[in-house]
Image (cartoon, rainbow over all chains, first blue to last red; front, top):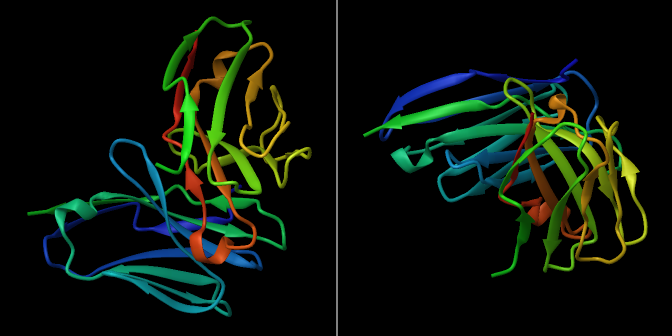
Length: 109
Length: 115
């Protein structure tokens, strides 16, 4: 049973497009984590948030606790943004996260 | 360069053999984790350690054991490997104080094939 659902599963965009990746979860959470997995397999932590919005460069993450939904936006997308984007949620105060299966993004030049 | 080192990067292992995956971090992070990643499934937590000297079971702990003798090292042992343990294994760490600022740091992964 996966309590974290991501959409879309696959996404192809033209360079420069504004991209949105969605994450929905079914349980109460204390934190939500967005990660990026490069084609070579390496995983990078992008954002950890529990409310509101965070921005880093061209990446913006938002979360709506009442609707149990988070979005990751990429502005002015670039081919180097091509990766799998993973959402994970934490319940309670522990360090354990439950991960979605990821959204595979391909940005075409 | 600060980060996590995993070894080996890949391994083919005969079923029934014992194997230890190594993980070392140099960031003095309190918490460390082992995840496995399988096609079509999200990362799943195997074991974790909130601080040196303590360990805990994650979502899929069966067939695996860990130890945390010091802050830096967190080895994962498969006592008797089975084909269903074929996976990519990621070690990660986090500083519980700075969790919301820095999230996790991941190792580059170990690709294990059990035949």
